[in-house]
Image (cartoon, rainbow, N blue to C red; front, side, top):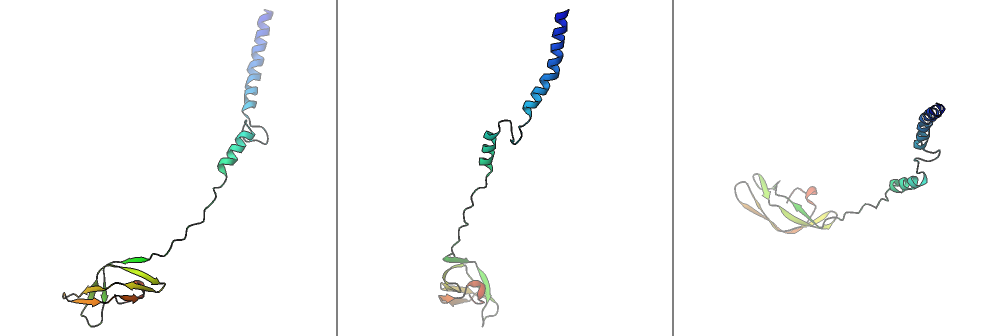
Length: 127
């Protein structure tokens, strides 16, 4: 009978004490983020530091620009003239070399445009 009381008392004490011991092991220690402490803190710091940024590359100006087919008004013609698509080579910031072109009028006639240096396509009215 005495042994039963002792065993019952030990069982009650263990039922009360063991959950508190287990709970205290799950808590993080003061100053640390995890029970492992410094090991996991160093790992966290090493994996979350900012990535160094490389300077953005400068894009060089293209040497040649494609100008698609377009219609332009040419003095002395009845309507717009179709100028075929072509490549223009950059000479300077405000000048490009245009190859010789053959334009077509609405009635089927052709107009020759000689090669030469001209303003870029967005700054001129003629081909």
